[in-house]
Length: 113
Length: 110
Image (cartoon, rainbow over all chains, first blue to last red; front, top):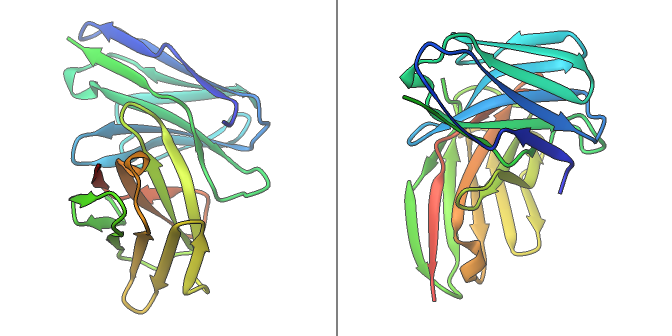
């Protein structure tokens, strides 16, 4: 398995609180991605990074921000969590030898009450 | 919006049978990929086919790509219980971003 970890793996939080999810890789891959997965929607891209301090928005970026201060870490922040952000969040990386393939972390299940 | 759409949404087959699922997409692509997701786990990359390729094999997997119809198919031959999972197609345009479909859920009955 590619060296990708996500923390926390499960979190329950209240509406209006800030939440930060962490993705950590040991593969030195250039690209990192945050997706959310909801029933009937597959995976939707929230934000992605193409290098340290280089990030861009994805399809569903409203209400989310990201930061990448080191190659290995990509943080996703929900500034003020809402119930519509209850989802499973996946981090992925790419840019290795098989450069277009993405490798996924185990996911974080977030519940906003 | 999602680029790829899989069909069918769900598929139930007997062990040993073949499973075929299809993916249609809307715009020009650089490559198309298929991923598998077991329940409660992250996605695992299965196979990538480039826009200038028509067919690709990997073990019991066969993928076809028809760019004129903007469609792809994934065939799993001689299915096993361990093939029970959700399968997603993902399309890549000019950059490293992928657009995923909603997936096909495959159940292999013993």
